[in-house]
Length: 184
Length: 168
Image 1 (cartoon, rainbow over the protein chains, first blue to last red):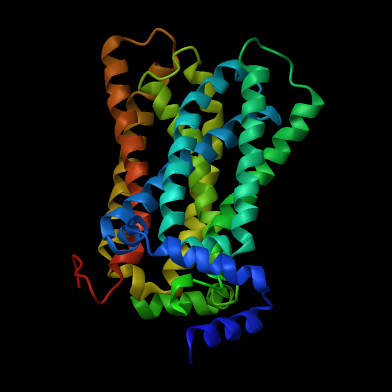
Image 2 (image 1 turned 135 degrees about the horizontal axis):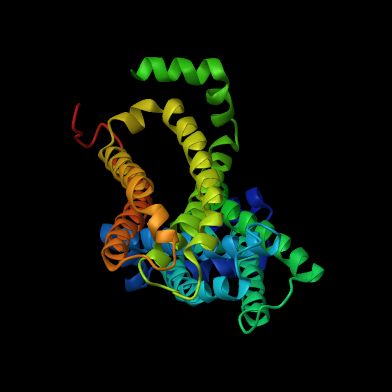
């Protein structure tokens, strides 16, 4: 079967439209860049990015969970203002999460970008990080009392991290395309 | 051994759940969330003992540690689910053996910490010698948990029968 035939077959099978053919073509080009091939084929590069992503994610999510738990009423003796100082480490780790995430995305761009679960993960992480920024601004300067809105936002933050971690795990099981270049 | 673990998995219903369409990723998600909880509480406590964020009281921060224990229990429960569903993939895997070794070191280190240093360290005027010992224990603990994450990621790369292990 010709490449065009295979693409048409794939699109019919997955209910895709014309603009998605163009996206697949762009992704296939991206997959053929030197950096993308190196990320996929060099064992240490891919494993390094994957491990760094997990380690950094554990610190980002862990510190966020600790602050959110404090805000929902756990460990009432613990000063919220001093706890939020751990956000410095959290932001460095968030930087590592995005760098390693970008490297992993470059290795298999079609696998993630053609999967709606990836956008759920990205959206949940972005909103959770915005909430972290909000908590840091609100509670870092002085010992402010924890208001009801902050408690609600802390529950939302906990839920968003559960969603983002789960979506991250489900990504490996829900992709329909591994490499776009196999269609060309 | 493999047969005993598989029989347990099948008799307890774990095998059926893990082989359902979403069983494995659900268990993996809970496993990683447990690990995050552990890092966010025990890891943060370790960092504080190592000298990071000195303004916060160790005794107050210790109140979060029970959530780290909860995270560890989630890890153990889901870990048993993985291990018993595909015992041949884990039992003979050098990455799993390394992971368990680091967990054992972390456990011994924790017992030693609570047996000798914890109470003194929680007091604000701990002696310099105790602080040094506590720093070392915290570094071992944090290092072990980070190594556990790295070994966890390595499991996929060392699936039997392609790799040797200590007892196979």
